[in-house]
Image 1 (tube, rainbow, N blue to C red):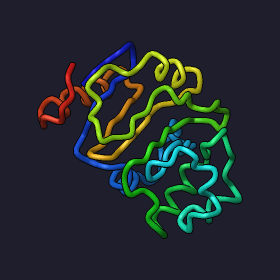
Image 2 (image 1 turned 120 degrees about the horizontal axis):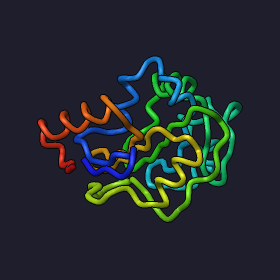
Image 3 (image 1 turned 30 degrees about the vertical axis):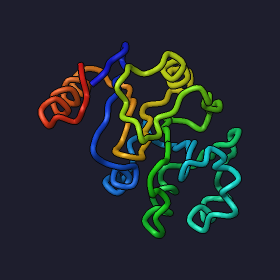
Length: 168
């Protein structure tokens, strides 16, 4: 696992779809989800009307640049009805709907595994927006998470023990 201040980054053999399938309910730090890439398209806002899977979210979605902000609860409900995430997607979780657009200078979307510490711009954006977790998939699941205390220790021990290509 790679660490920078309170932020940890790494890679797991998983996907955003798998991750979301195991969350219910979402913790308070993940009350909102910012969808910044869907099936390699970074213009998620334009997909709201054309994607059948996203249409149930359209009336509650808030456009943030080319991204889409929705409550995680609504996203999970829509995901249960019809699969939204198939790979090469990126999503960020926040405690509030007050968010600025994610800079285009960094991405967690694969196929590359995250082997470097999180970029300063990513950490700055996450910190400014209270973002707790960013996920990007493609070939496996890249993540950047704000962790401290026991959570940081447990993630470090878990990723080290199961050889998920994360380094300390």
